[in-house]
Image (cartoon, rainbow, N blue to C red):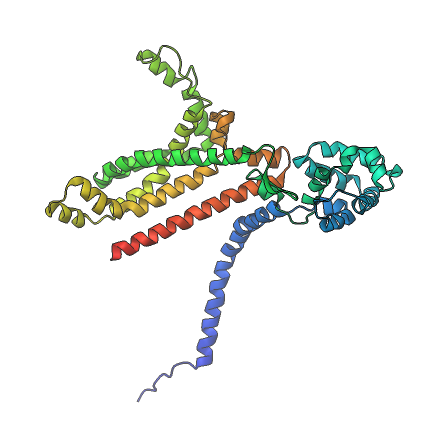
Length: 405
């Protein structure tokens, strides 16, 4: 009789399973590291920059502690002046320059005020009379409120500034002097993204219905033409629209040749040119998820509805549209979110009133070096897109539950 093979002992099997598990972890490690470096790390930096406010504690540490104890409502006195003068004597020019830049974000006059105090610090004793003789603004409550808002190391100044609000220690949250500036920019950004999304939906839906009824060969050929924009960079496509839409461009030449207009129509450096170019770039993002949803649509339900005597509009809204709605919502959400972050197209084709929030984020990071406000504006966009994604996921989940019922 041949010997019966016995199964391996349990410890051996456990060791093999453990080794296979560690190999799987090893294969996943590069992907996890890549996500940490390219996604989690930048998001974490964005969150920190939006609330970091450490210029004043670094330049004037004793003053920062005194400001934390000050209520922000009473008149400034020697409890603030003496630590300030002592810190000012020891502060390095580099730290003072960083502090002056931070204070100038809110009150530009404080840059020169701080520089003058540094030059005259040898003759200051921290008394009320000496500070008033130096400059009466040092006795102003508003001046020291600005210092207190920068007392850090963590603060809400940049986040509140992103929505045109500041914290006044006497009145609470109030509108800034330039109230409505960033709120109007955010509203403009969301309106441009919404209009682009709506136009993409209106163009993509009939196009996808047409493609869905074609033979596979014809459909693939047409899809290849839709994919052509992906093979050229956004900068090249935007520059091409600049050539086409200028006053002496092909579009105006054609309109004048047909006799529809007598003089060139201004199609460039306005909202029309921005929307047109954005739709050209974003239309494929709408077509593919919508076409996939239409391809997976159950035709038998549509035929059954017609056989029961339902009218075409009722069949469309109650039978066909609910089946393609997840693809439509996914495409619309993708177009909206991607459009929110566009920079090149509005910068080249739009005027001053057509710039989106990304333009100002780039300006703050490369021009004024106001990383705090740039991060705060980016955080506002991040929160908005996250909320939109959660709403869309909730609606899609409810739609799927409705289909199952």
